[in-house]
Length: 278
Length: 121
Image (cartoon, rainbow over the protein chains, first blue to last red):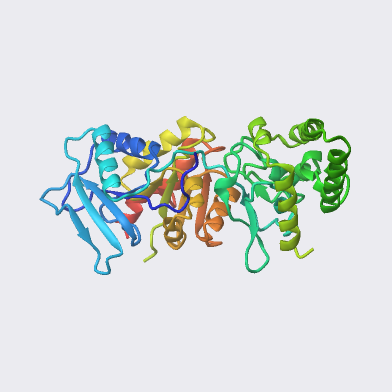
């Protein structure tokens, strides 16, 4: 399950400046790796170097402190709670346990737990054509108050599905964790623009204007249901069409299985039409 | 005196798209370098959460980022309402470059190690 995208997280600073004994290089690397792989961000504070900008929320400061430090402190405005913990003689695993204890005490959400998979819009290429908004059936896209396309529900995106980037005529949608370019953010080359998959047009896929196509599908479906009352047959037809789409756009099977119902698609199309001012 | 570039390292912890040997070597060299840096588990995950830390980093001015494709990194900051400045940001790609190339760019200024360059100011 994907995590709550707005939940607070615990920030960590590894303090190795005045008043503390630096860790050995090996221990520091091991500790960083352990914390990073569990999803924690760590600011490494060293002598003479700039300290990280002011934080808000909860900050856990780890170090081999030379003298006793208070366990907790708070900024004058109360926006930052600082927790000090000494890590002298602790293994990286023991430090991780300590961090997780503090995180629980702060009610901070455990980091990670999902593969962060969602589209990123390259606004240098995007022409605001709204094809992605019309295409995505999971409400990942929305429009801001200026009428500009934006990713509004990134956690709705289906992991490993890059389909919307393939329907974007400008190759303006990328998925940083995708395996290949230009969808992974690699430079867009002329041959990418010419590639047939990159030039897929939803209208072409559906045989004309998408709304007209959806309306027609609705009419056809109603006629079919009233004529035959054969829901099974309608579903089979839909599956055949979707298989074709799946192959063209590299959509994972589990995403296809999670597709919304025809009624939900119609509602989505109506909402998109209203948003686009059609 | 020019403020030294802040260093941001992304561990891309939740996917296997950055070669493990590259990211681990870059992390090891950063850790042993004596310079201050910020290490984040996964920039994508931070962007999805609209982590305010991204805004702080974008406002740092001079910044070197070891992560992935520059187009993706800039997009992730924009998605988090924290666009990176046009100038003063160097994005190094651990998906395509070697650890040696990345560390050279992160840890040297005009051919001198960053730590030494900072001391001589």
